[in-house]
Length: 289
Image 1 (cartoon, rainbow, N blue to C red):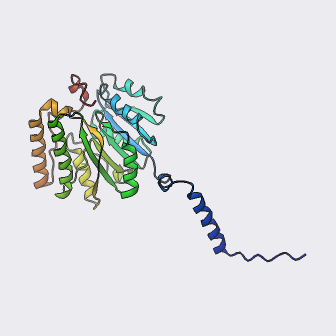
Image 2 (image 1 turned 90 degrees about the vertical axis):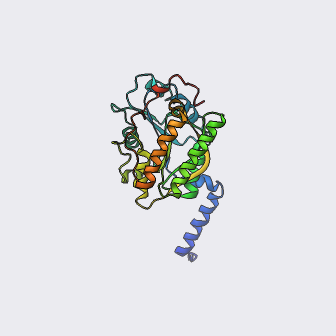
Image 3 (image 1 turned 60 degrees about the vertical axis):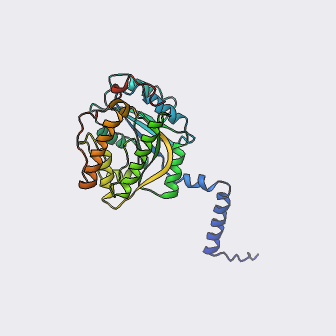
């Protein structure tokens, strides 16, 4: 018995495979497919005596529309219940790590958190911030649509007072103008950066107690990589430091820093009154709510 001759070429096989793939792809949305190739986000939160503020941030993370992220809290040996408060959220977040550092230094803690994570993207957040429910979703969309290397976003104040809203508008304009004047800064309260790039420039400068966010952005900018801005409000910025020190004093400090940066490209290296930790704000519990 003579077998039938089957004329199948390699090209035919490839066409069949492509058609099968296209049929499978048609069963899912393009957005969902693209998300499968996006490495998860690593959220890094440095803390020091933040028992009154950290729960607000973690509660906002629990309300995110997308939960594909890991969290690392790096505490600087708090004297309050910050660490215990962080551990209490472990049942909610399977990918939550809580590390305790003997050194209370925001740059050191951020770098330590980066080393403890696995995600392609590092998301640095301050402990007194609150994230809007679509924070993670909008970050993922921005990464997929704009292919940034480092970016930040707009934010709103933690109160409805007109003076606070105006102050926040000025702050957002400050970040925008930093790009215009070729002095870009990704603010400490929210910086999203590729891990590979962060490690390439050596992370945050642990010798600085002020302006470490500007210095990081400048190291990246020096490599020809532009800071991008997600021009949407996706988180709530705490004005607790502004209220504590006073708007005039706060604005004068940043005006001096801005002028120094503008004319010399250098920032203030140390500000004695700029102290890390939530212990200074224990009397104002409603600032971030």
